Amino acid sequence: VILAAIPGRGERNVQGAYGVGRLLAGRGPRAVGRLSYNLYLWHWPVIVLAEARLGTLGWPAKTALTLAAVLPALATMRWVEQPLRRSRTVSELPRRGLSVGISAIVLPVVLALVVGTATLHMMGPATPVDVKGLPPGAASGPSLLARVPGAPVADGGPVVPSPAQARKDFPPDQGCQVAPEVTRSPQCLFGAVDSPDRIVLLGDSHAGQWFSPMLALASQRGWALQELVKQGCP
Image 1 (cartoon, rainbow, N blue to C red):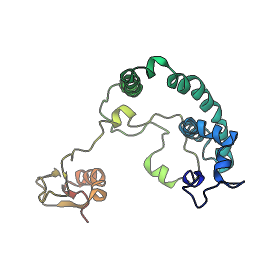
Image 2: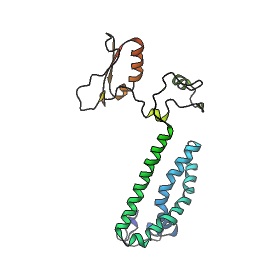
Image 3: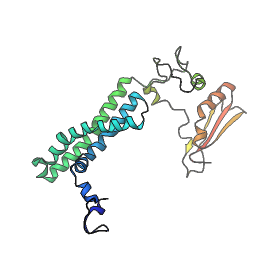
Image 4: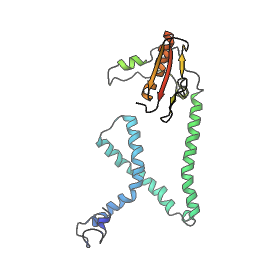
């Protein structure tokens, strides 16, 4: 579109009365152009946060939210972008401008790491998961599978395992799922390893997801469980 608007680059050397160049040269398109990057940055968080709060939105609501995002976009351009672009302190020394740009990237990353680490500490220690079952009245796996589609899940109960526990909640088969180029599996034998009865879990990562229930079944029946799992193995 931009090349077509330049005399000598398009099919005509002279702009017509309704050429693209004349349309783009208007005050409205130029204002949208100046604002376009800030609006691009702002419209996504506005839409995502609104949907997180209100649920899935249709295109009329998303269009309205995009138009509403013009306000923070204008504020950002007025009080952040333009002062930085016109700052003599930044423009006179390119090295100083580069340091401002690097700081604008590094500081938010460091802040996110600090806040994330503090949040994990506030969650509490990753103590072992309580295997005695869910608290009374909590929604269990079978009840969640049996509920009517679209029916809301009861709120208010604790999450088991907690987010801090879930970070440590891995089955004891780490290292058993070998990489695609590996041609031999380690001795991954679990449960009653001396039992003459054995379950062999064979396949790819889709088979590996069944390790925990298979191990529970083997433990209940006094069987052994052998895992032969390889990423991407058909």
